[in-house]
Image 1 (tube, rainbow, N blue to C red):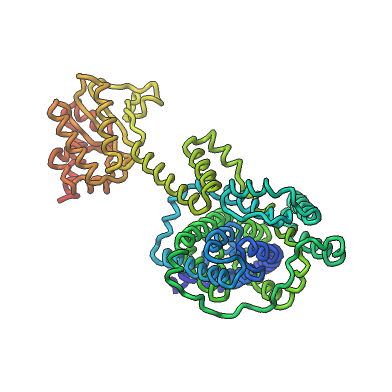
Image 2 (cartoon, rainbow, N blue to C red):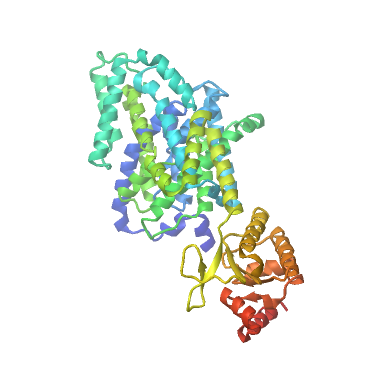
Length: 576
């Protein structure tokens, strides 16, 4: 039963559901649905799909996640970033809005869901660690800007090009801006101002619903004055039918790059908002691999009911938590309201101006442009700042797919750079104590010219073995001819590979020939295991391993030490 609860988290919280939680869940579910319905219609337009498909994506994915997701407050459904990625990938294969375009978008959801599900099953959630926070921030900010600029066509009533490359967008906007539709622009910009105003007054106010209602009333009852404003028109009523997406192996191969991008972005969105909400409560903990399984099942089952790829929404998840949601019951409430809308309320949206939807999107996504984080990194960490900038501009100018690849690639390069050039420092003895500390930070420490005690702050492996050797040789050269003992303080070394051991053996023999002893201090058990398995005891004895640097120096100075004998005996017994 415990395993079943782990695989299906709803079985963990639903039997313990309290009446006191119901009010918050109902209010949150209604509030999220009020935001979700107009957003779903708007995001479907970003994806190049008919508006009804935004509501389909708000149905089964949300329901499935509530059952299998480890977070009880994350809101799943159509999102702006994923919608633009869908449009970017599918538009090269079919005409936006056509039957083949819709079929490809639905197939894409199945591919994305299958990959996410398999990653979760095989415990591959750690892959997200290769996307650092600066990469996520740079990527999200760039995509937000691209999404916003792509909505200028609906906001201003001009048939601008749609692209995920900013220079193409800006060039086309500059060329055609003079053809803006006056009435469309007035309604769109007014809607933007109203949304911004209500957001500043109180974020809980359903600003999207307010501008939707005002837009419908304006066009419906004052239509003669606004006849040139493009409206949504007919949205079909009814629930989506069950249908298997058309499986085409050649098409799947073409969709794979965009599918992998959606997998990573969707997972990042969900983990990011999930971790944020998790930190504000003590009732549950996010499990990354379970999130992959939940997202995967949401997209797989969603694709069987005409949904395009879904993920978690930053804004709706925040609204869900702020409105009092405690469990997945809030998601069930939202689903019920989406069903009611699909069955009875779609005709209400007939007179909804598309510029209103564009205004909702533009205000929402421009809030994702994180200038504060860039400023913070500029003063806190230059390397992370330039990583953010590189990801931001590569996404803007080369497109979403290449932006995420650039971010991942640079993250890996930075990781390799940092692990291949770790901090190495000589230590000195703190007067009247047994401790050794960084000689550059603690000016009062005593440095013995006959002894070199140094610390290496990283794992010792093939990527930094040469760096270790070079830094050691530099420190030895600084000591000069008086040097008699080298002590490696290995407390910060948590792993060592065969390349690292071979380098150590070579250096130990090299310095022994020159009359310099080589001791080890503070070596962790697993690291010691690796050293001994790789044959280090061929060039050193157990007597050369010490608990602390001070013990190593004292043993060298006095020649014999009862405590060291006991320690060497203890190590020997452990390896008999």
